Length: 266
Length: 308
Image (cartoon, rainbow over all chains, first blue to last red; front, side, top):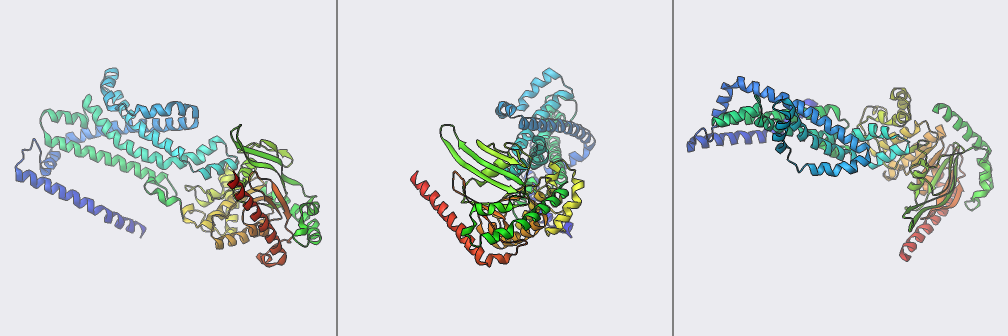
């Protein structure tokens, strides 16, 4: 009953964008045909789909390679971001020293560091993981710290009044309270990590979707580039959904970051 | 541990009831006759739980201090229900923060069981104005929180927690999350949480002020019932005079800022009490007296702000 209504609700909200995408694809297809646009400039969706099916094997190999890289980088970057957030929160002096620098450092485009990292660390896995780590680190660290800072005053006051120790306040109140913020940071990091992986592969790799794109660009295989883009979008969505799923399992009490309003009032 | 405490709290309170109340009721039939000293002797044999003497606290800078608490002395005896009433802005919350150890008094002494606890945390049970239940914990996990913080594993608390939740009309909501409960139910859960605390003294900070009038009077009756059963030492802050009269053994009336004790009143009604006492002439007389005091204070505050 509950599942059914959830599905019905999901269907109600999902069909308009779905139809919009279908219409867009149809428009694209007919425009390409009507204006007789050459395939190396803009291939039609049907050509892209056909080509994707034909080179499925090599696409799968490259996709898995990128996925592996993305997941490793995402895990390390997020863990690092969470660790730094906790550390800066628990040591106020460290926070006042480093937080402004952290914000400033975001003006350095991480992607631009990639060539430098290649020079320092070669073309192996390490420099790529560093790029993704840098890209994931910031949104996780900052939104988690925001979550800590927004800890409910009345709950904090309560914990102090009953004599809770610093560690208890952190474990029992601040950390669980910041979970929705952590997850909204993780969601952003998930999308960034795919982008980071692709760009790292552009700069130097022997396989992966980014490498594949560079290869196809030289051959003017626009259709294959489009196939790669579709895969990148799919990967991003996959990671995004994965994070959302984990959030559903971890965050309790009707206060997920999606519907944060529900928790407060009755 | 707390079971034993409760037991001793009850007997102490009963002693006091037998020894004290009838006398005081006889000595001061009218509100005017209930001035502090005449009645204080009645309860003298019960040990003092919490004693504040000459507590001062100022905020603001050294050069321009803003005195908030200006020499408050009061005491809560074991098993006694004491209320603090005062105009809004009379520093009642600051007083609680001092007792809870979040703040240190500039001068004066705060003692629990005869030992100074000024600036020390972790000696009291507390119920805040907002229920402050943790939204990610189920009600039973919330109720067990105080014990948990004080070192008792959740599992060992659950049985007792469930028993008290049943008394609070929360049966069937053990696994529910706070946002699914009404305001009154949330406050009852917050009260049970404080009740389960291993610390005997309970500090309740305007616990019903956010509730609607009907829920509020329901909660008062419920609290009266539970308290008369457990007889914990309670310090209760309110600005609701009838509430204070209905629940308390002793009422301290605080002045506006910087607050000091204007008047100490022993409430003469015998226990167990019923809400009907609110219609007795004695009750009405006390209420009139207290309302007069409060209005006077409120007026002073207002004229004070105009002056400055």
